[in-house]
Amino acid sequence: MNWAELNSIQNYLHIHPELSFQEFKTSQFIEQTLKRWDIVFHRFKNLSTGGWAEIGSGKKVYAFRADIDALPISESKEHSVVSAKDNIMHACGHDYHTTIGLGLLKYFSENPEMLKGKLRVIFQPGEEAAPGGAEKVVQENIWHNVKGILTVHVKPQTETGKFLLYHGPVQASSTSIQIKLSGPGGHTSKPSETVDLIQVAGQFIVQIQAYLNQRKDPRDSIAFAFGSIHGGSTHNIIPDQILLRGTLRTLDNQVLESCLKLIRDFSQTFARLYRIEAEVQFPTNCPATINDPDLSRKFEDFMLKSGRDKDLLKPAKPSMGADDFAFYLQKVPGLYLLVGGGGKGHLHSANLELDPGLIKPTVQTMAAFISSLLNTNV
Ligand SMILES: [Zn+2]
Ligand SMILES: [Zn+2]
Image (cartoon, rainbow, N blue to C red; front, side, top):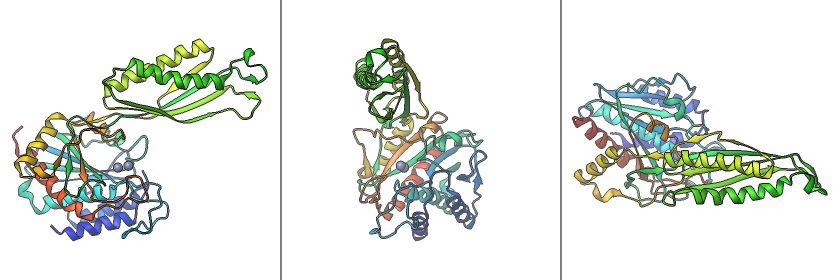
């Protein structure tokens, strides 16, 4: 394997980031790179960017998701490799994910005897958007014979070469919530003759938290918070509309469903009591990413049996962030691993700088794991 070539691929991607669903040049670059290696890149039918490629033969297929989009952030100019675009940066490490996806295809093209089946790599656009690209990719006709899907996400603070494995939930669900409260409006001199909607909205915000906390199972984790509140125009008019927007996050898709019902129920009961109307909408929804128990056990076994136990970390708590990888898990079993990024800064920040040395151990370990999955007879 020419690891320097993969490093220069990551460099190119890092210097030329593109935002969600605008990854035209990135897709072209992936296509050209694969062409150089005699691997065919297929475009998606339902999306203008991204695509997929596969290697190997036979009926059994494992998929690998590599997300390819960047974020609207201006990168710190102190980094050794800096984005050429002022306001766009690979601040979530998707340049590394794309490189790893390409690296796996290259690895198996050089070592075909390692692959007793097929590896299908999905170069997914728009992971950072809501709704994201995965919702469209699951509708593509690429899922026949897929036994499972794998992905990795970089974790900057963890040492290069380490793999973080979660049995069960790894990323939370994220549902955006929009609640429109409407009343008759009126003069602030006569709140008793109308509904004082600002005061009522204050009650609503306090009471909905208490209601959710009281009604949900205390063993279930949720994060529920409003991020925006809009209403009113001046000091002496009681507004007739207030818009609240927030997110709900859970680590279990059944808990998510029951919380969404609680939010609807509470809003209707509250509206009746305070003589207002409440319109509840959930504009976007990403389920929780929950690792398949069989795949996570197989990964743990693989790490132990291949002498990589020192590189396996089992963190106690999952993240309350979300990843649209969850949509694939509604289709096929999957495994979402975090890999050490050996870097500085944080994801989604201008200071993020990862260790290019993470590419080699990630490609080697994932290739060996995929090979072991395809070599078993189940
Ligand atoms: Zn991100
Ligand atoms: Zn990401």
